[in-house]
Length: 192
Ligand SMILES: Cc1cc2nc3c(=O)[nH]c(=O)nc-3n(C[C@H](O)[C@H](O)[C@H](O)COP(=O)(O)O)c2cc1C
Image (cartoon, rainbow, N blue to C red; front, top):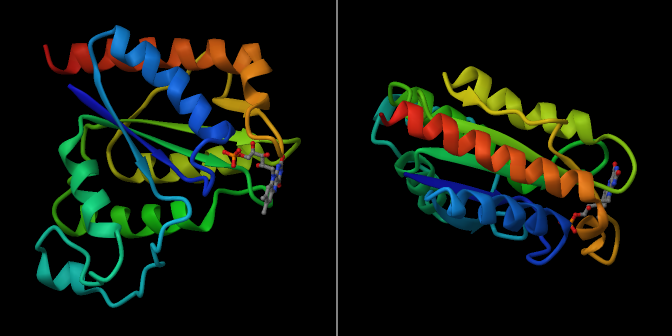
């Protein structure tokens, strides 16, 4: 059983990736394989609205010049996915939004490739707007027949410019631990 974590922050070692690392620690302790995938700061482009995925139905996006298809393959192969983002103007980063738009379209165009996968959103923020970003992530899961896992609070962690402040947000880290346990619990039930 495998869960991939996608970091929407351009900062590879910022608050968002530290939240994913805390979550991964618990998942691995539960026997779940994990892989971190970077989308923030990559060359990913937004959906071109060409509708070729609907015509071709070949499990790919026709725009092949960026990193999308490689990431999408990993999303389809995994049992679950965690989409993580810092809050940018009360929303997710444009790179993660591009991934959501394109992966949602290609998965649906091909008969529901995300159906019955496990999903969770994780968001870091400095002060406000995190819930809106969290909702943006959950929109993908909710329209793709996925199972969303929650925790003891919404999956938010506070951090700022230095990029490691979230390590002092104990409630966020406890929440990541609980989220990892619940994701593992559900995955084990689904694969029973
Ligand atoms: C362009 C930009 C916009 C931001 N907008 C917000 C915001 O609307 N609300 C907020 O609380 N923090 C905002 N922040 C702060 C980051 O969301 C926060 O520091 C986050 O923890 C950074 O995550 P990272 O270290 O993984 O990059 C913004 C940061 C940047 C660079």
